[in-house]
Amino acid sequence: MTRNNDANELNLYRKSLISRTKIFSVAPMIDWTDRHCRYFHRQISREALLYTEMVVADAIIHGPRDRLLGHDAAEHPLALQLGGSDPAKLAEAVKIAEPYLYDEINLNVGCPSDRVQSGTFGACLMLTPETVAACVAAMKRVATVPVTVKCRIGVDEQEPEHALPELISRVLDAGADAIWIHARKAWLKGLSPKENREIPPLDYEIVYRMKQRWPDVFIGINGGIRTLDEAATHLAHVDGVMLGRAAYQNAAILADIDQRFFGAPAAEPDWEALCNRMMVYAERHIASGGRLQHVTRHMVGLFTGLPGARRYRQILSTDAAKSGAGPEVLAAAFAAVDFSGTEQEAVSA
Image 1: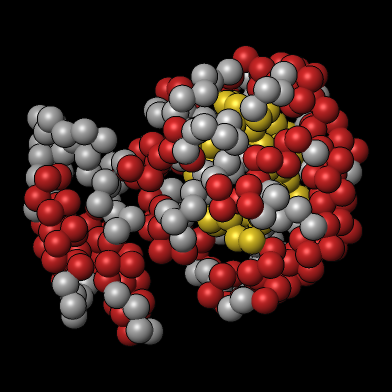
Image 2 (image 1 turned 90 degrees about the vertical axis):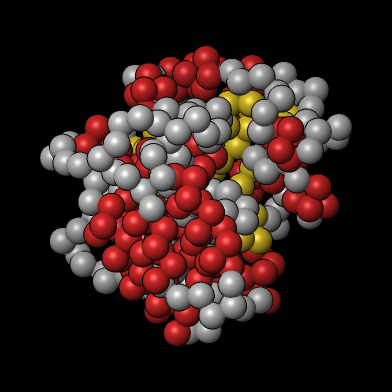
């Protein structure tokens, strides 16, 4: 589904590129940020920029386009992240995606998984910045929205102080509108994707230096950011901050974003209204042939720390997975949580 193209409402990302407004984003995460996850996150924050999972250009060209690119109108502002290393194929994928009205097209130059490496894209493209530049240039020629790059600070034995600015310089010359930087190296051999998100040391300072070097370019930061206080600290140095696992594993963190970073009126989250909206959405998904678990698997960590959260998780993890499970399971799960309590459970995020 595409969004209502209201000419009076520029989306958040385009406005930010014009006015330098800061951006808060939920990172693209393979197997996590699918359309159901994004719809759920949008019910909690109106303003956060959301990303799709990485979608490979070849899949868009040859695969089921509506399944890969379709989304709910409510998900905007919404960016499509593409994977690939062939400029012509990426340009074709951008053209195919045009009717779906994404607000940004992002090129993945940061994923370190074996599957991505075997396709010669993702983080291994850090080794060939000229290829990245050619891809960006091809995408820009056909795109009608901003084209951005999400990268690491380097890979393997690269020296980030040289590799990162070279990549940035080349993609900016090719027309990139913004750069998102995961502030870790990626080790293409010897570390799993999970280890690559945890073991290489974070270097936020190099991202700050890139912003100082290119003060007029939108540069956002990603990697290891777990709280909104940390996000606010980073936003004193860069233009955008991107949370990944912290936002997914405890989505309630998104409830404070609009007020804290975008000037929305302070208000307590209306969890009952959220439950009702998600029940309607789940019912619609089930009616189209889906299963409740497709929706609820993204909601399990919502109330981490609140009294009743353990029971909430149990219901969503077991009852929602049963054959024929319906939206009433969501109502039962939400009813288990004590929203008035202040004593927190000793649970791990």
